Amino acid sequence: MHYLFILNDPPYGTERSYNGLRLALAMIRDPDHVVRVFLMGDAAACAKAGQKLPPGYYNLEHLVTSLLKHRGQVAVCGTCMDARGLKDEELVPGAQRGTLDMLAEWTEWGEQVLVF
View 1 (cartoon, one colour):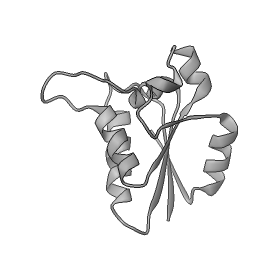
View 2 (cartoon, helix red, strand yellow):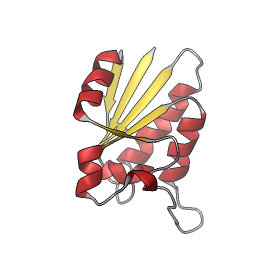
View 3 (cartoon, helix red, strand yellow):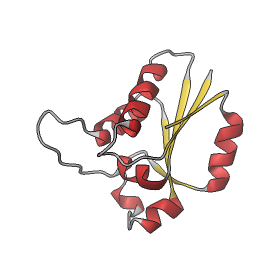
View 4 (cartoon, one colour):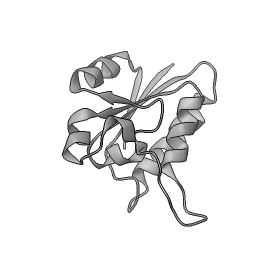
């Protein structure tokens, strides 16, 4: 089964992106599932490398890294990155700059599309 997760909310201040990534990780544990995550708007910051948080606070960089290590794919909207001053080299290794055309292709690929 192919799953596409589209996240829109910032990494902190709301738990929508956190919960979307948690569900994506739960889904990818099944070897029959293929998971892709597209980060848009303020969710672009979820894939920023070097996040430093207080002990005990969830860290979305770690969730994104874990998803990538478990054969998931993560793309970040390039326009959204540019609007927030986020450079390609600031992304978690393995995350890629995405485009609206990529999102359209991934949406057609996904048998289930979940939006957070």
